[in-house]
Length: 113
Length: 112
Image (tube, rainbow over all chains, first blue to last red; front, side, top):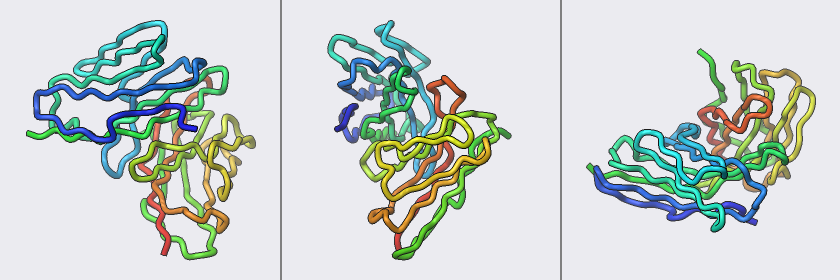
């Protein structure tokens, strides 16, 4: 049972464009929604995270939008740069269940110069 | 330099062989995790440990075993019972009660 569904699987964007990645979840007990960035051959690193008491969080060029009623959240990468080319994973966890993260399938982003 | 060290970076397993992947952290984190990553798929939880001498199965524990004898170390053994072991294995750690995971650089396991 895939509890966190991520789309698209891959996307190509021109330098300076906007990359948008979407995730949908099923478990309404989830209370923490992070995004991780992974470069080839490396482990993922936390990029930005949100809790369900806010609808948007922005850190530099990265923004999370959160829609609790729709059980969806998305990552927007503004002014995309070639250095943003990586695989992005959304995830979710439930504190009451021990904070174990459930990951989406990942999105490979390629930013063309 | 604090962090998580996984070794080896590449590992090859022969049929019927058990292999052990090493994970060491010097972040003084209580919790440690093992995830498996397959191409085009997300990370799936194999085992996790929130305290020394205690660990729990994740979503795909069959064919794997772990130990947690020291706070700093959480080795993963891929046993011969795991019929499809080829994958990228990631170790992670976190502070107790904290959702933020810190990952190692991974071990790529392949079958000869």
